[in-house]
Image: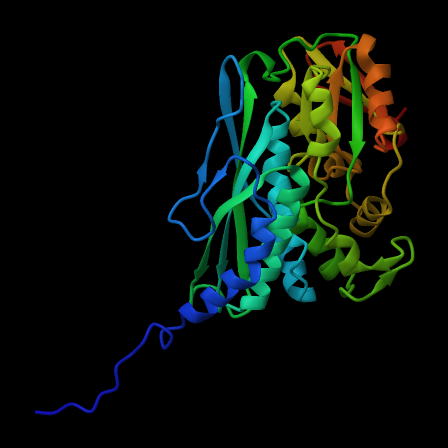
Length: 353
């Protein structure tokens, strides 16, 4: 008996292999610009290869970190702007491994989409590649998964991981932190990539704003302000790490000041932070005002304008600040380490001091 049924293809099921190949071709040049001397091979292999030859260390250790972008992605999708969200993905992992003294070596990304748009995916990966290039690490590989029926058309997720290297004797652990040490803060570029579930509730649900609404205090639209990419800190901090001038570092991500600072403190000391010591970015003032958010909750959720904290000895503080300022980096002395068992004490402004 003859059958007239037409064969079903992978494309019929919602997965377009040709579109995937086109996306790879569009992003290839951006990826190759990130290659460092350690990269072995080229884009398209089953696994990324990286040689550790040339790293003359007494006891080399690899440091890895992984993260995604979270619900900030919804802003990129709403604005149909996808060329900066890759920086958020890289920054969340690269900044995390940096705090342990690691020099970033390479990064791998994972992009999952509902329907593969080659231009959209290439824009995402170009953002990843640009952030890798700025951080001095190679975009060693990645994966694009077209998941028809799982994500809606236009929806996607981005995640990745970074690997860095540090000589064990130079590993930054915070163990030597003691009372009298100085807390320095490096400014953030904005909200970065944490707290966006609260941000979206305040901005779009409670305040009723749209992404194209202009807020005078921002000097730009709501969407432009909130989509500002997470700052990358390797260029600012690696020269200090190499000089062994940093005793402890804190990447202010989810959990804000209260949850992140204690992760680097030894027992018996606390961090006293003066929130008057740096300019508060308008976006945080407006979020607090619009949502009537308690100030402790703000500092538990957001970076509040400080994205990276350095803890240095009092003897080194002036030299560290001078080094950063000579390289055009803003830096604020925001507090001191004291003896005590309450890990973080915030004072100033709405904290009664």
